[in-house]
Amino acid sequence: MTRIVLLGASGSGRTTQALHLQARLRLPAISTSEILRLEIANATDLGLEVKRFVDAGEFVPDRLTIELVRSRLGMPDAQHGWILEGYPRTAFQAEELDFLLDELGTPLDCAIYLQASEETLMQRSRSRGGSDDRIEIVQKRIEQFFELTIPLLEYYGYKQKLLTINSELDIATVSTRIEYGIEHLGQ
Image 1 (cartoon, rainbow, N blue to C red):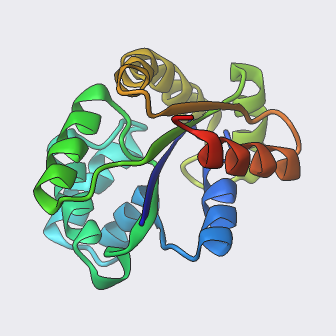
Image 2 (image 1 turned 180 degrees about the vertical axis):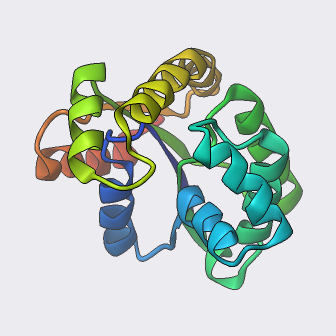
């Protein structure tokens, strides 16, 4: 059983690496962004509440995100492990995830931080396009991410579950380093 969280700002390569790990490890890659998009597209009560925050370029509040993650990790395809991308974003969310995993008897194996400079994150995010990728929103997300990241990295570092990877390298090199790091974490 393998349970991994992928951490990194928008543009760090989280989704790309989640999909690579999904194929390599044969585990579901669970994207909180995708879960949120589906809620918005389905115009559920939760989706309409989430949409207000997304449209403003804000992070979705913990109480909403935690509820969605709890539901998703309880699905049958996640019973033998998973790759969680886009969550947690705060130390509080990391603690909540640990409480949930303790309840399920399935502790987290590894938190992988895909590290990139602000310049790289801006360039990658802007080149993707999309209605939620206006420059002001991208900049705001990056600033919020860095404000919240240090306590999150300290949390996983203290638990000796943190693996930091330079995500400015080419995709194949980043993937190789992640795989190597997972194999050797805790040794």
